[in-house]
Length: 174
Image (cartoon, rainbow, N blue to C red; front, side, top):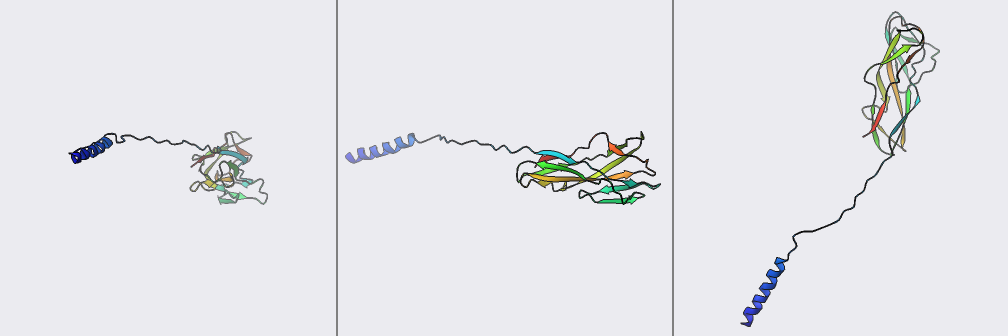
């Protein structure tokens, strides 16, 4: 009988242990966030196609992001080039972060400052770094150069042409 009671005590302890088995658990976690430096874009130079000569034949004057000019059609450049610069911007932000570039998709109008109604269109904007690859902020900054193609009409009216509204360039973190 002692053996039966001992066996019953062991079985009772076993069932009692399973009856109080754990049915829930709790753990803790920390929360964190990192705020990065806001991305900024500052213009340092305006786009300037320089001095050109028109003819009865229409053509183009292209300035690359590196500031190199090429012409097509009846457009020619002179030995006195004037001021020739791509638009230059300074991109500032978090070191090592990449960013995307958005350039104008529609033509930008340059109006003649002395002859009302005379205009030229700038389009086909390109940049360095390129829109396709975007840029990377090394040391927290990078130069962004923008070029474009200027369409010159036949016998384009002489004078200074400039934009009434500046063209937009946008950068965004990837």
